[in-house]
Length: 142
Ligand code: RB5
Image (cartoon, rainbow, N blue to C red; front, side, top):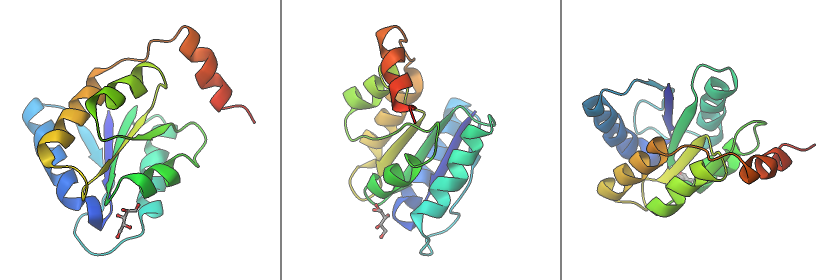
């Protein structure tokens, strides 16, 4: 399962991603926001991360104006590895090498065409494990 979230800066992009996933027949949970009213991105990031840490979803996509605030907020949550990406190579490699479980996108940075390519690159990639597992484990060290 995929979980999606946005603030007002990422609302339009989340709408485009939902349409894209609908057309691909992929299921998702939408934790909001559900309109363009101003909302604090950490609130949405926390709600999305809870869906992942609870096991309800495996991967998440967070959209705000830049993707940066969402990634900062999400990376505060234990077990979350969020990557703010604006190129497809990074969106794929952050799954392959970092086992990222949240992709963060900037609705005021990216055109919808590129953003949907990033979504496909992220969702279509797998963690490679091996030497990367040791490094990912180190991220969780207390
Ligand atoms: C909201 O204006 C904006 O600050 C937010 O969407 C995001 O870009 C924060 O990183």
